[in-house]
Length: 219
Image 1 (cartoon, rainbow, N blue to C red):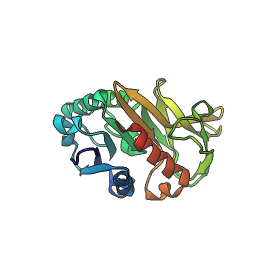
Image 2 (cartoon, rainbow, N blue to C red):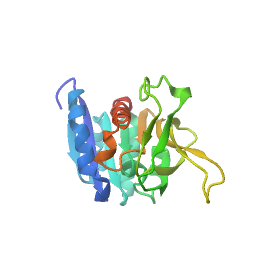
Image 3 (cartoon, rainbow, N blue to C red):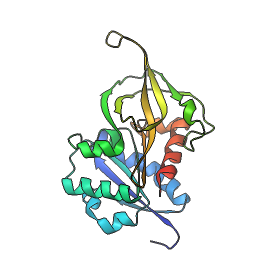
């Protein structure tokens, strides 16, 4: 690693439908432009490399579904607790390793249902966090397509929600957490549920929130 530069580790794989290679490739030049050396790994075994994780300032994970070993999970959690940042989007972070409850505690949320379809939904930024660097200066916006209904940890700082109207199943409208920030030990964790594929990042607010989230999470 070049002296004075930060290290980012991109871990990608799992179900290909969420375009883990294509979406992470969107942000590699961004990270490099902000002074990161970027290492890309396509195996979860990297989470067992204690020395590498100790000198990593940011982990960007895009790994939908799949299984993680106890050693890999423990290595990831220990690294974040020690100060390594963790960031990701959509299923690559909140629909990963569903059998691992410790991982869910780390990320602060879990995918429950994909609403699918092209319907527009309103994204509401949280007024209580208007000054947070991830959303400062931005305004409410609309998104289309796949949106997640999630369960969310009460310790999350929820920065944005997606509005769901009442329907034949839901008795009243609900604002579901869509972007949040949290800490785990000395590390920061950023999660956005936007980013089903590269097309989603054409929405300027989605791109901006993701880029800011990566920088915020980094050590």
